[in-house]
Image (tube, rainbow, N blue to C red):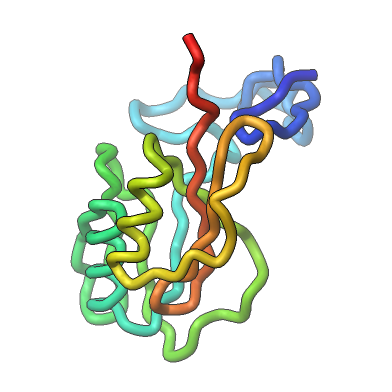
Length: 156
């Protein structure tokens, strides 16, 4: 057993995702094209927003994200990596609280907290310590609750 970056115990962590010994896999995974995510890996996250322009302004100011315009109801998220990692999708009302919880990595949690607040977000929990680092939860202008975490600083 090992511990993942969030401090959670991981059973069977020596099994490579997509290998023939993966739980629920009965055959060897096919070869992957460059940039293709591993089998069953998270690959895209969509956030429901009530105002696309306001949401883009918030996430650009808070995290430096840029966007791909797909029309009045959708924008792809570019977080500085080479691929689009998610999207903002317009719905007239925010989804109810609950469901999956998205965590964003930060090299400097305190600076990120300041950017979230300056951009109009509301920090609703933390920052607090957890095994493996510190984190906070915030609500964006559309009512989505997300988290930001930073690893434990090395004492090296």
